Amino acid sequence: MNSRPTVLLLAACQATFVTGTSLIVAVSALVGVSLAPDPRLATLPAGVLALFAMATTMPASLLMRRIGRQNGFRLGVVAGAIGASTSALAIARHDFALFCAGAAGLGVLAGAAGFYRFAAADAVSAVDRPRAISLVLAGGLVAAFLGPSLAAWSRTAVAGLDFVGCYIALALLQIVSLTLLGFVDIPRPPLEETAGGGRPLTALVRQPRYAIAVFAAVVAYATMTALMSATPLAMGARGFAFGDTATVIQWHAVGMFAPSFFSGRLVQRYGTLPMMAAGCLCLVLSAAAGLAGESAWFFRLGLAALGVGWNFLFVAASTLLTRTYSPGEKARAQGLNDLLVFATVTVAAGFSGVLHEVIGWRVMNLASLVPVVALLLLTTVAHQRNRASSSNEPGGAEPEGQQPTD
Image (cartoon, rainbow, N blue to C red; front, side, top):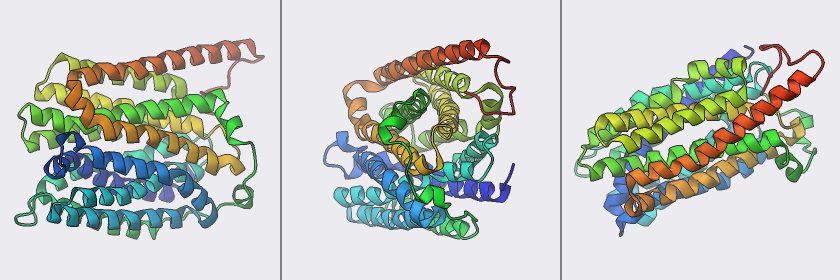
């Protein structure tokens, strides 16, 4: 693989970012419950975070086209440090509105950090893009152990102020990210990319491959966010201790990122559409675990399967997306993809607490099957059509490993 040091440094940046994200997942809803005037607003800060991540994606993508990936990532990290510091102050002052404002800064960080995977894909050849994307996501495996543990340790680090230490630790993580970014060597965009041009967005969206890639990423993130955000509430309602919830989130993080050590190779070997189908089946298993029981083991199994399903879908969808645009179209195509993803995540995160209060944990798992089954049917049909088209062409399909396939 070309540019391996760049990919590994981006994986380290991803690890730092997801460590902070994992910490937020473990504590945000619990802080929300303690600060919000209504328990149904407990996940509103998560929704604000997702909203600002959504609002950041397209401007960040276009800005990076002008000033380069590295400077764009740095601006996102600075916003994250400000957001984490604001959140710590909000908890100390018991100010729910200020806590939501802090979440906005963290959302800007999330919107910029989402492009780590595309920066890695740009650094390698087309054949190696699945592995580069998956290796960057593999950096998040650190978060499976460090994020929840850091949350549990820092929760009482500031005497008399629960959770303030968590957000101080989150601010310090941004200093680590800035240091790592100082060593990343990402060339400035070439003229053919900065000049823009190419097809309008409407033409990009009408491509079947682009539409499937975006839909798969949306389903992966929306399903994962809704169920993951509601998990601390569901476990708290059933009397589980905070440590039990942190362990379940840890299992979820392992499921999200451990497969990245091989999911890129699986995409290279089997193609994007079959890996999307495999991801859908993992999400079905997750929902089945949520419906089957409410012991700690069912939560662990369900959240681990949820993570694996997200990984397979997201690596495959990101890979497929990179095959749908020209250099001049890249910023708009990637920005629109992440905009649509975070738009759905905003709704999922913002309303997961309301859904948990109104319909309950079991019905949430059952409802998650609707988009997952729809995507499974779509990818199966598209794959069958691709195979039929390849068999009708002279010479058949391209050999695996030589050309990217769907």
